[in-house]
Image (cartoon, rainbow, N blue to C red):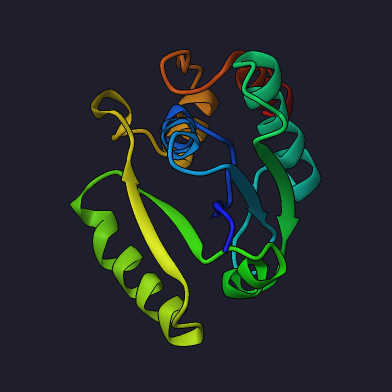
Length: 163
């Protein structure tokens, strides 16, 4: 297997917590596939195409990360199927707090049952970003608060336009 890792999530919107996980994973893997979920079981502020553009602007325009090492894609399939498609045996997941662990542990176990060649690697964002969630960022914007400490300039612009 090549050193490709799949980082699935909703990214509605991307935050500095997500970005920490991406930056850390770039030190470990040759390529990161940021897989933007378009599952039907969630209500999104941004549709999948908008979220992909927001992620791309944040990573490549705001932060100037290497486009050759990161691919941003939509997906609706099982993450394990996405791993097969990209010939990856690594799923990346970010952990913020202990409260995330139980869900992430169960998800990793289910993915392992679906394909026992797949490993889930948990990365924590930096301490100052561990409390950030997309849900709170959206709520703060709706209430007129400042989110500069939580996400990139282009993401803030997209949020303000949407809300």
